[in-house]
Image 1 (cartoon, rainbow, N blue to C red):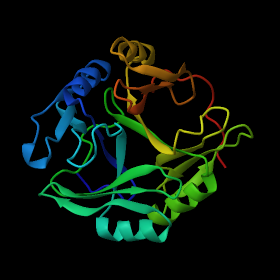
Image 2: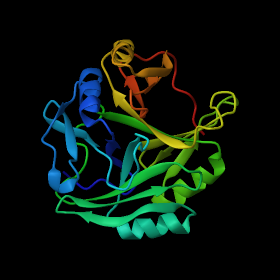
Image 3: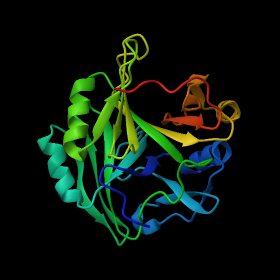
Image 4: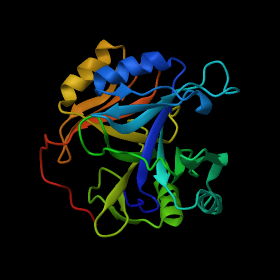
Length: 266
């Protein structure tokens, strides 16, 4: 596989205090199967769809406290994780976990943008990232949710060299970032006071593709997940936002079921 350009979403994982519970939940909702836990790397466990790696789950690392908050983390590709970490600092971001090598698999760091949204950087080694994208049970899209859109936009552009276009809609502040040649890689949504309680910080929402959004939501609720938003039709697909039983936020989208015309981007 050719190396993904810098700034391309390349991998996703999440920390769970109850890893077996997470495997049961995502196995049912997204149809994932799981490999063997890697004890050498903190029992990191890869998830698969149709035999292809799509994500991973891991228990808390020692020192993270008794009840660390479960959350999904999206990683962006980098040819040099140390250099990208310096760009993050220069652009006003914060490095939460310094660049480190993960055996032969690659190198990583964890960071926050200036508005508090957490994400990762991944420099591939033998682990190149998603083996399946845009198909049922796999990564489909991601969006940065922030209350400081201008600050977030400037940061993302400076660190990853993105181009961007804004949705032409006076009621919604939504921007799409791309790496040229009309290759969209990330969305950014302004969090409004009406829709987001003040205690919810900036975050990156990951969308996983499903065959049927409504059935995925029903499965999540049956397993004690919580529907936060939707299901809702859109020109991009029918989607919904969910909290899993351990509080990790994610979204599901049926990209085959589209309603309406694509919005104008300027």
